[in-house]
Length: 395
Length: 140
Image 1 (cartoon, each protein chain N blue to C red):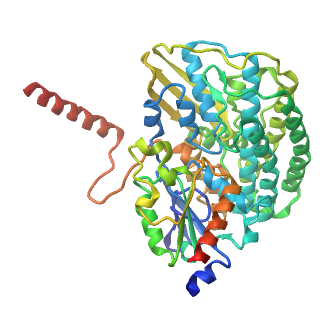
Image 2 (image 1 turned 90 degrees about the vertical axis):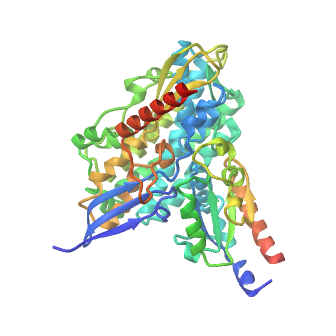
Image 3 (image 1 turned 45 degrees about the horizontal axis):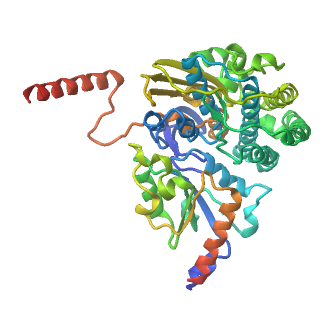
């Protein structure tokens, strides 16, 4: 029995581009336990959003994450529309779907490249990111920016897709198919990828359900969930597509789910372009009454959830965001232990972690101070209120 | 211009540091390395350890948890070391200037040699900025 040792990774390390801290507890070459510490990216966007006007919030929530930067405004707009009970013009729905699926393409290609990078296979990184560039060009053409598209707006979309841009989208999708096929074939054929990813970091269906993982991680473990189908938003129920599910739950299944999902995204974009009608792109919204609403969107990493509450003023009084990585990252606690240190790199990255999405709160560790639990915080705030009350009564 | 600076301009090794960004600037930095932009033709290479770095690329809004680590990392870097603020967040705190968790702009914490604003700056802008950095170093 070898001695237990600790390998610290991070918070700044070449493995992932975001800061996060992993403590691998190892016995020899084998990882036996894992501790995750995040919070280096917390910027307090929920609170900032509550200080912004309804129409400014989409820009604020867009800055949560650069990769799924359309999912957050999309979910927020759906939440406000849920509160208002309005319907959005059909054309706006289709434009939203096209942007959402283009984003999924770019996000999955990005992850595929990074996954290649993490297993030391930089060729895949270069090829996948080369294939991703036309998608970004398309974003630049349609929205004016490579990232942060600012397309979503309460009641519709901010910009129309011009008629002369349709051929460019069609051409990009058509040219992407052979590249995707090549990737699918490469993943299937390459012995190196197979050796590094098959039977590594297995997350069983039971574990997936108990951790409540979302999106491609859940679907790779045989758990058939997808918000686009289960709680259909926009017009996803009018286009033909299928939810990709794999049973194995290992890294290989996660790669396969994402690669195959890209084909579905291409197909959805093509169908949207064929179906998109002419007409308005937004419904006019004047006042936002008191009430509450929720919005759920299938972001590239899973379900993205926004809750807003209004008191009839021009700002949301509560804006709650739950990003998919919050549920996905803890699943590392069962997928990383039991395998070797070299597998940890790819396993930690396989959930496609997005810490800037996840970090809606931060804890500070200082000597002499303890971390309070939720109940203790409530107690503390009650005590403080009592104290303030007394001071107020004295006056 | 000292010998050190002269040597530096031959091939700058960059270290990427995200202190609370939204990932976009980080992705655009990585994008610079991929085939379309290929910043390696200018001799630049992304490296894993700050102890080998000539340039630190800082992205994101400085927050309370990451700023002490940022200072620590800057202290570990061999000098002269150039600091580049990429994106509007480290340049001027962007929309996070009102946040309770962000502290200051980057230049209030450490000397900054180059600002590349934008949300996110395009890879072309990053390459142009780094080319300017080389010019700045050679003119010293």
